[in-house]
Length: 366
Image (cartoon, rainbow, N blue to C red; front, top):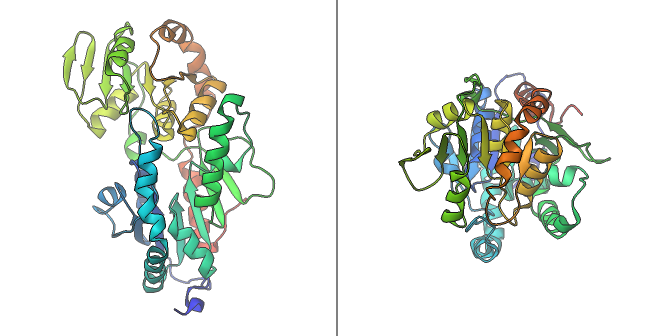
């Protein structure tokens, strides 16, 4: 392979660029974020690299090459370490062969710009070839900033930050998307901006119909979950549970993006896990949040931690949501709403501007 062929190209006269985009395939958030960015630049030619759930989300609109990469397995509302190691063992065993596939793909596609959303191989290939690579994700909030971590979470913090640094930190520039923005550590080429929101989220105006929206796809004990939901003295709409129909004041609904966003935009508050996209969308609509982060997933913990620290809601540790937190939380709804109204939870314009700059100049505006 002639590595000189992949050196950063001279300034292009044409407005069209060929962009190679690596996307982490566990769950849906990474692929949905990548779609939102690609749709904003119809003048460019995108080729995606992803795995697991990623190709199924992306391939309806863009060409995708399914290349194995590292992922995470969740079982019973916690990270399943053994299953995750089993999932990733073949990838690490075959990493040299997979890297050759990525290098060949880059040689064939000849990208003008490379972007990675928490993908393992593409930033490494770029390092080998001397090609700039832009990382766009939320996970690097863990390593780009210093955090006031509770001592009890330090083992998880150290383990997770080490994994992020060793496995997913080979890009040249970092655009970190987050509803909380601590100062960036000195010396890092990283910029933190408010969340990137889907067009379908932006298309809806918030209102309040009085119900509580519950989204919880990883449940440890369904009976304890029901005990929490039953304690809410309002109509409750539940998504993510393998159940449909009405039971008392609880309405279980099937998966539906349009229906879910309608119910999110019109609820009084939200009960959910610690996922960044879910929390960000709730805050954009002005909805306080009770967060229930997955055990062992430090990224979810830190989202929930800052949610409470900034006064946007509260979070619960443990294997289930205790019903007794509801009265205290509801007594503070006005306080939460006031704090949420004072912050910005949509960074789309700034994010698109930074992506445009990187595609043209191979660097961000720090």
